[in-house]
Image (cartoon, rainbow, N blue to C red; front, side, top):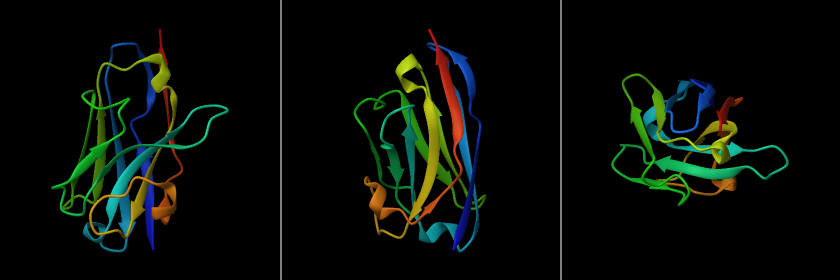
Length: 124
């Protein structure tokens, strides 16, 4: 079992930056691959980025590639999502999630544990 708490969301103008954080507690953090998903109003929850247990492997959805960086600090039990050059279409509730997969995971069904989400709003 692991508990996840996201923070760092907020209102930002287009072109701005935000860094989301997700603090984990419970089972050993380094035994989980971690991911970020987002859900815009009226849309399905979609994959954004994932990072392997050691942090050596990462993968991004095309729409954020080049603008976002996922990272983790296993000593602090925290995963981050740095988002730059934000666009109005990035507006969504962002969720972090933990997966027992060995490397990276890009689908919702691979993640057993979820945080409560943090709102990101990008104004034009």
